[in-house]
Image 1 (tube, helix red, strand yellow):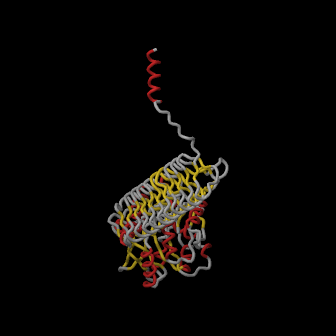
Image 2: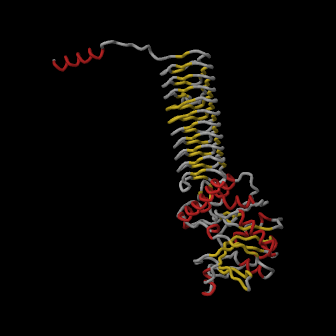
Image 3: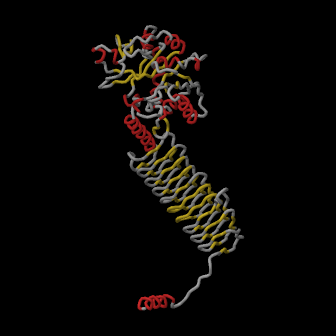
Length: 459
């Protein structure tokens, strides 16, 4: 997979193949297609920002059979492929040649390419596409209906430029032929580069060249950020349509952002402008309200996430109600039927079945039992400026509004904390904790105050 180019038209200091598309770098998509086909070795050929590209690929595919190759100078596509020879030493099967900036390529097309290679019986097969305006693309030149060669646009005669069948640059090649042929390619062209397309004419001399036609959208590369956004729209449409055909309701597919690999159960409803990002798993009959953002989170069946809620690395049980405007931060774990309402924030909190915190609450570093009720304005004071500490609530605990739980602290089963209380000591089961000052009522105080103010003004 060729990933060595700089991508000057991206107008960026970042290597082209690292630019993100739906949460992954460009090169992740063709690489994943190769793995889906069962590639025994995947060799990204890196060059510009080689270490950064390698680091990114390894992070996204930690278990893949990767072998990296370095193209030290940008001397053309044939030179890039030749750089992979040592990495594939000993491999005597087929070599599939892909590009790191072609994110829309389908697994089915690659399977068809391999089948075309088998059917032709030659040493090479290619993917072509038909373009109404083929300007800039290499033309597939046929003789007697058979693929004879590829001629790059700048090297075409006027007659060849009229050909609309174009080379997509994607090949299946027998390894033994590939390495021998690459050694023979010379830079005798307008660009002075080593063209990989020269392989086609060399292969055609040995036998039939297989070819499979693909849609131009599928084989389109990325050269600038306008094209990057265009490819992202197509990819997003594909993903959303696949979910809808599988039984998911997406209210506004044009605004739903769903990354590849997200699992969503049937009869789930996704609202407008929802974002579902890497590692997220959604169960059945879930409702996700407008503007909500879920990252690496698991949501079980029947849960309702109301608008503008944010979940990060959270696990939500069945039939919960979240939001609106809730934020569940990493290591939040909710049992079934938990209610977290508007402007409730959790972090590293485990909350038991049926517990509720419906308003304006922060629960961090907390273990909360089942059936608890946590009033508005409650916070766990989990940080002492140096360390984080745990708050523990037993089952059936009632926390009054505007309370502070200063960790480390425990409230036992069935305990009550009165509104406005600062809890600094453990509360035994079944006990009431109240720390506010006694209420004082002074009857007639308002009238007396007004009388004093009137006397001052008159004086």
